[in-house]
Amino acid sequence: MKKWFILYTKPNQEIKVADQLKSLNISSFCPTVTIIKNYSDRKKKIIKPLLPSYVFVNIEDAKRNDVFSIYGIVRYMFWLEKPAIVRESEIELMKQYLGGVYQSVSLAKFTRGQLYKISDLVYSFFHDLLFQIS
Image (cartoon, rainbow, N blue to C red; front, side, top):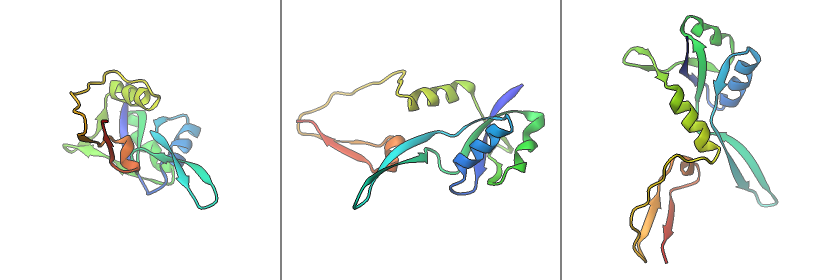
């Protein structure tokens, strides 16, 4: 039975590793986010991994060592001395979230003139976002 495992990669190799896994017909998922970089003469869209140095791989337990033929993979992540396994539902939620589909959103009461801080995983690439209700 296939399970989602977490691979730890060399820095800046996440997208390349995911592409190479795909070429070996191994299902993988590297969550990415598009960032717009402002240069002095232009703006450029850059695709960055949401979780630096991590790639999720969907593979059978017996075939886990097949991935080490790919350059850039360091090791599997472990939890309590066993390879860390991510539930299928969590991977699907992450894919939906990155696709702009949200399952539930809750808002607290906002007060006029109060400063609020949004510290979301996606926004951590930019900075903590502050906004004021007016």
